[in-house]
Image (cartoon, rainbow, N blue to C red; front, side, top):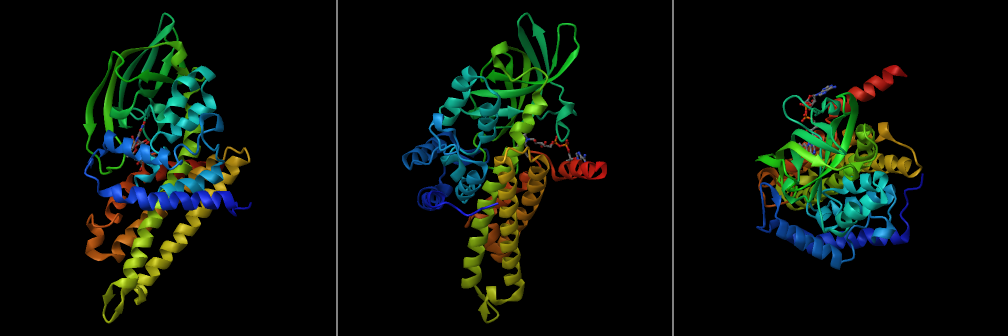
Length: 389
Ligand SMILES: Cc1cc2nc3c(=O)[nH]c(=O)nc-3n(C[C@H](O)[C@H](O)[C@H](O)COP(=O)(O)OP(=O)(O)OC[C@H]3O[C@@H](n4cnc5c(N)ncnc54)[C@H](O)[C@@H]3O)c2cc1C
């Protein structure tokens, strides 16, 4: 394994870092954002800046205008983008980047033209709708209760979903539903593309959450006999969970990459403060209690970065890397949250204010231990695999 950066990649990393520092960080205090994330207007401005800087959708395949980055290359680019919570929006690598990857892998050429291309251009947004209320899909996604029943050549999709990120901003939704044949026999879960505004689809409520960085926030929605034509099925009927893995393995890693950038930002702020702030006759960084926190931060950042790049390298070799991406997700979501927490501690009271980026990152990183599989579920799966041998 060689994680050395080529001169081109090192230059790209530097450009993104400069762009985020110069053009994006100043927008962090922009009033066009609320508890449900940055507004559409602010997102469009971020998109415009990303495009003007030539940094939009770098991860896209070359035929769609991107650089066709490998997974290891994405690790470099997405970490640099993640230095600001708004950076990934300006580069089109959050939200929806998991959907980009999945559509690239499983959509037909017609479906790619219809949905993937405009997602990569920034003309459309999507959601990925699996999780449900009422004891449906959650930590165990196979509990999905939303149904798709045949009606002539079409399917009628009915059920409820919640925690659906970006629902209000999306032009279409990728909905996981248990599929039945005409006799009512179960065929397994399938992914259906449902347009925003489709008859029978409605938002029940927008949810108030701890996080505030995802455009559009999160919604609870209902589908009541939403008609879906066959050309809106992604992949084969009954293989929805298999395809979800195609999405989730790399998506888990890209979350790790972006959060690595955000945690590094917090650490940088903490280092600066520790050098400047004095207490008991010397800079606080010279007190062992503080310098040890900084040292722990540096070790955690280093090992998270290695874990991400190693899992990415396996994906680049064509391996599935399910266990590695799972271990990496648990490790990074827990260790990076500790980095953010220690950084806040180093800043004392002002760390818990919105005077620096740390408090917002602290609020937002918490959910990383829940989405794309809670830590306990990854441990449960790993534990079972260990015992099986
Ligand atoms: C910010 C955010 C954004 C999200 N965006 C989306 C989205 O866009 N689309 C979507 O479909 N979903 C989304 N989700 C939902 C997310 O995927 C689920 O929260 C996650 O899968 C866990 O499901 P659950 O919340 O139903 O937890 P539950 O299934 O209720 O589980 C609760 C807890 O039980 C424990 N647990 C469960 N199983 C085990 C086990 N085997 N061993 C040990 N402990 C266990 C875990 O501690 C777990 O946290 C989002 C969630 C958040 C917080």
